[in-house]
Image (cartoon, rainbow, N blue to C red):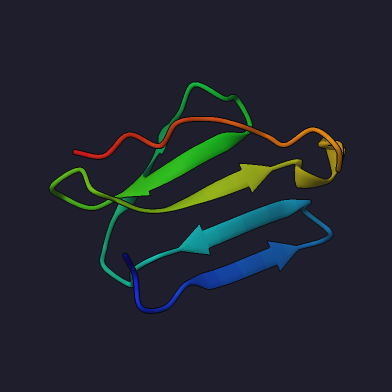
Length: 69
C-alpha cells in the first residue's frame, strides 16, 4: 500500500486523478469507459483517473476493476 496518495480534481474539466506513486507510468483503459488506470513499466497499478466524475450518483458508487500485473 502507498504511504501517500495524491488527488487532483479539475472542476472545469470534471476530471479526478488519484496517484499512489510518483513513478513514471502510462494510462490504459479499463472495463469502465470513464476510468483509466495508470500503470508503471512492470504493469503495476500506480493510480487511476475518472472523467465526468460529477455524473455519477452519490447513492450508487462507480465500480470497476484495476488490473494489477
